Length: 446
Image (tube, rainbow, N blue to C red; front, side, top):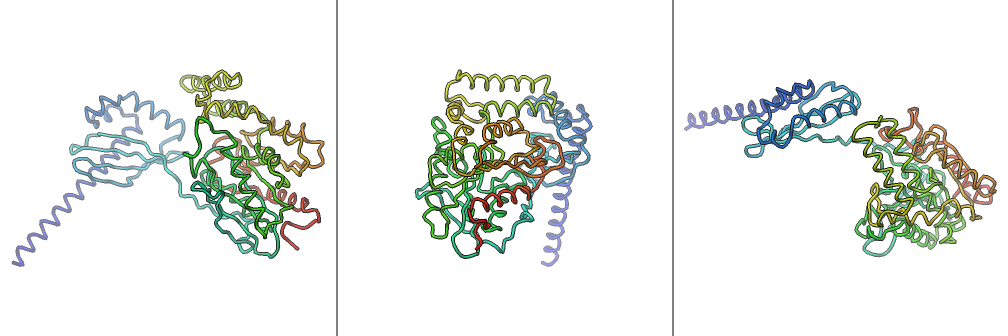
């Protein structure tokens, strides 16, 4: 009997070895395909494809993909086997390709003959550390959960509360455009968290929350939504909740908005007398369609889109924006992720004109390397509000749109670099809050 068990064990070991050898062969096969793709060896690549797959994916598509990857990522330096998964007659092999500027995952599905049945290119999401900013003093404050609203669609948020006793000034942070979380996370950056921790470290209470378009996107009717439903109503609700707290100094309640959030801050102040000051960080002074067009032209100049498909796309986008200016598009038409009626509604509002009428303190900050809200906008703001005694301007010369300092040139690549909101801006904003207290105290200090 022991002999039979020994024979069975040997058979199992042999089967396992053969299986592992088969898996290894398939993994190597994925490498062969990538070598052919990298070397532009199209004849070899053709030999590795299943006829049915080749019937729907012409070799010209592979050539175009190879050229595009080369333009965006630079030279393909190396690749390495990452994973393998066998299901029935098909095996999925993943190799990670390391280009000079970026990395991608190539995912291939092969059959029992090792012929390619499927092929995908997957973007890699980096594992960001999200380290706290150097100016954050976590021992100075605590954080508690808080919701905005009392319905089934109440927004989850976080309230940073100083550990010092007494009533504290409070800041409500308002997001930029898009379905952002409470930290306004963009790749490896969390600008609203930086602002919250920076201000809370110096005695300010700070509220940040999930934007409605992220937490409850279905609650916003795409056929009717305006900036009021998307942003304003929730900030007004937050003001009412905070004013009712016994630990809040209601004479020092500020709304601080980043970019698009800043452009609606003046309107929020006119709707709620409880708002005692507003800060606009990298906020546009021009109509949204004008700002977007300038961004498109700037990026096009960087990527040399003067020919082919890119040129046609840019021309079409600019044509749509021109129709927005003239109100020539149906309200439901989507233009760069937003319906035309959203643009039309914004055209009825003017952040500059509204801010000019305010008598409460106003703080405006701009980034010198911001290609989205540019010097054009800063000059308009300064021209309109520069002579008002209730207005303070601050320029972060080396800062991007996220108000993060960089040594690089302005451009979309700035978002790929992890960083923190400028310490200089944190100091300036804290100083502004200090001066607004009326007695020279830092917010929250005796």
